[in-house]
Image 1: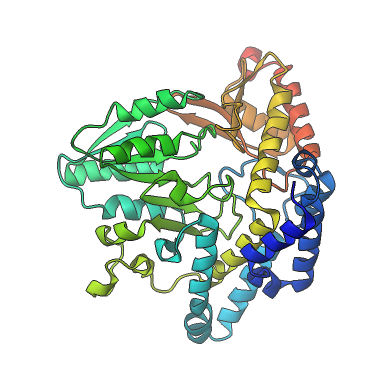
Image 2 (image 1 turned 90 degrees about the vertical axis):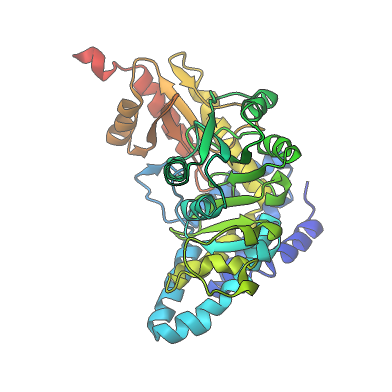
Length: 438
């Protein structure tokens, strides 16, 4: 349980008095701190189910009151304070673009880098700010010095953009990619780790691990796999697109060498924002996707990956407000609340014998994302029915051996919202499937 004193001390330490959030709306920042402090004084169990606090959090978002949005695993909306910051910086830039973009907003990148590094638990010299996980991970995949015959171990459940990047390296450079054939859910960490390590050989240079599988939300034993890889001198690339800003952890603790994530997912930063992490001693080994000054002193500078030219300075600077918003809630409290919401709806829908869950129920192996199906119904039929009849937005998953309807709540989702969803699933399960009506 957090005491009042420890909460205030912690808040001041990791937010620096909320510089980005306070810059946009100091009155809101103070009220947020007050409400967050009050919630933190409760027991953990009471805190995550405190609908007064989480209802207030929902009020900070501008999500539709008519459409129930449950695809936060795809992309998350931003709280209004982040939208306001984005607009503020955008309007500033338009007052004199080359002056305000390059001489004012661009100068805020180092403060933002340090803020993101604090959240990631690493050095600011190991963080590059970019546009999404695809850009970050593709930069690393294409920047690695791999030659024909070198082997990479990945899995059948990696994200498509990364699968395609490795296919391109296979076709272009003769790199050999081996894929562990995972069947999820599976809570046996030793078994999953062995599926990766069984593919390691003396030619294996890197293992690509998806931290949280986007298809059904299962958390893989990334550190166990990474530890085994390091014993064999194999580097580790970790896709953290769905775990960063959701799960309370530090990137270095995963024992990865490289990572990429999208900040417009659970961190709720502006659309098209992301970061790349590379261990300091590995930076010199990676070629940037875009050119940078041919200065040998920049070989080990993480900033060589940011030579994009003109970019959306406004959305980049608004990331800082999103970090402040996240930090005021707190990483652990946010993780616990969203896992509570995932458990809330899954425990209710599986009481219906026609509903099947395809995601782990273990707290260690799942958090926000869960996949379900209804006997006799195709996943796309369930998705269409939920939208047409109930105005609930979810998505269909068909990838390799994973099939179902994916549901992802967020901090602004309330238990009342999920009661509406559970009721809809029950009604669909008790109705006649479209195929049976023919």
